Length: 513
Image (cartoon, rainbow, N blue to C red; front, side, top):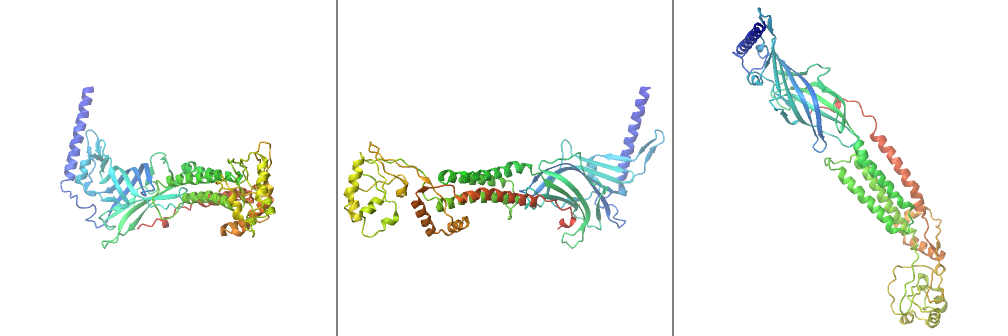
């Protein structure tokens, strides 16, 4: 029995093979592959398209293109290839569809479909060319292939990285006009589909819209039938929040630490400001690596520029504090010893301008930074001898030119007292805390911008008379509140502006050119 069944199967397969061979030979006997179907009827050939997208990516902002791997299927009817269903009365066999080798494609007519906005596309050929060809008994042809398509995707990056992008794919006939070949989508409700749940690393697929339309390529031959599909994408912002937005925000907050540092800490505050600016520069350069050199600023650029502005404003704020409210050094220095005579530094500039030289009272009113005397008697004899001199030039003849002190100490008589301690050394009393004048912060800011030297001299004289050192500046006190509040308001406006709901998809924004 088994041998009989096997013989019957062999007979059936031989019969089918012979029938298929006979069918193909009969179909191709008088077939002209250069003539499109329905040409003799005077109607356009109807070509249906169906796309199944397997994967997408990469999507490049720098080159403004995207890639996708898909099954691209074309359907059309060629009645010249139709055959009646052959039936074997003995075995009750019927042939209603033929699956043919891809070499058969070279012998039949095919639509010259191409991608209008394509850059480079190729057919997968491993292990064999990924193509499929089927012919039904009525001449309906199914031509499927696996393609990797790389196409242009014009992008507007003003809202980057909170942007929405629409990547189109436009296809149609290269040579046949709309009167010769007409394209339309197969299964209008599901003509473009995705294999499984397609996920992208940088985007979410929001919607996929497709349509058929007529398109003119500025030629005299007429319009062309084309199909257009647009894939709407929304960018993921998580990467940019972690890598750029959060570090920039923390750097700006770090720059505000200088408001709580004493204004005497010049090197600390300047160093902190420069460090924050340089760090932001590094982040800014890195953020533009994968972006094209567009002529407009993106949303990310505006945020980095704002962060730059806050860090630079912090430096400028301290410059104003340092120039207009820091009148003394605010530091107490140890007395430097000299081998023979004291280094005399005249503090009060007003007394330098007195006419007629130096008098006894003027000399007593002047405070000298004295060091290196062996005992207190030297100080007394020095003052007694110099009191007999009237010209300022004679006074300098007694003293050799003093070496420059480590720092200029502009302190009045009320700031220090010279005391003898038995060993011939001198000590200084601690300076008191400076009190601010009643000048408003707004006026101080204007004076800073105008570089008002009269106001500068006035503040210097006030600090000298009061015998005080620096305290917390009112500018710093205001900046502690103004900078954080303004930065929070800026962030509220920024995120509200760029995270607004996106407008629905509209074909008016995707006019084919």
